[in-house]
Image (cartoon, rainbow, N blue to C red; front, side):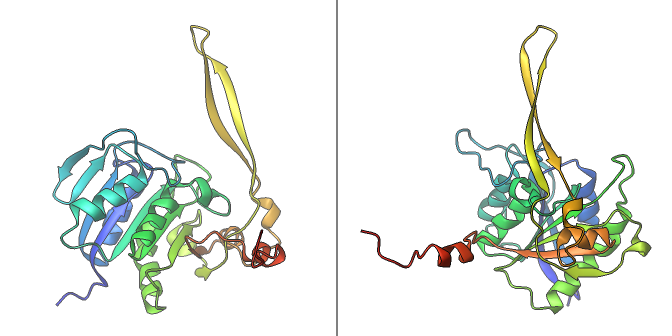
Length: 261
């Protein structure tokens, strides 16, 4: 009998089927799951959020046994896996990532990594998103999640992790032996200052555009219980997130229990 904690694991991401982070996650998943399936977008779709492909047909390319590239979004990939490729025996965990770059605070709104995991939660499976912080894009400390992913999953399973709760996990930009433990913290607020549009001209004087973000991670340094502050302390941040986006404080303040005529 297997001593691993999962029977079947589904892996996806938003950086694309060939991303280094997905390869790292696949190796880590083999430590905790008997069977690992990889179903991910054909290309990099960072920032895809919770988008679905509804106007064009989806196509799948088989790369190997239990490994598929989807010509669609991260959420498309999860749905295609769970409602078609793995329909005979659904996974008991969905792992999304490992994203190249952190997904903290407001980032989760636009992140294809976190929203792919939330799609798994919506379907009814324990789901988790992994992201890796970096300062130098050419020197990501991939060995850190390679060692810590299994530990995170073991900790969560011991804690009674429910399939109704999606976990957003971020690894600090340090080597594995420099990680200052794991912290269960809330999602921070306000790090996204602005959305920007960069307008340019190509060689034929035709305009084209790039979207960008202005970020401020320093505004939350004084808050000690957020995902941002945990990363600042070189800890792994674990944040439970959910599908319900209702602002319950506003709900009570606005008196929405009253009958509107």
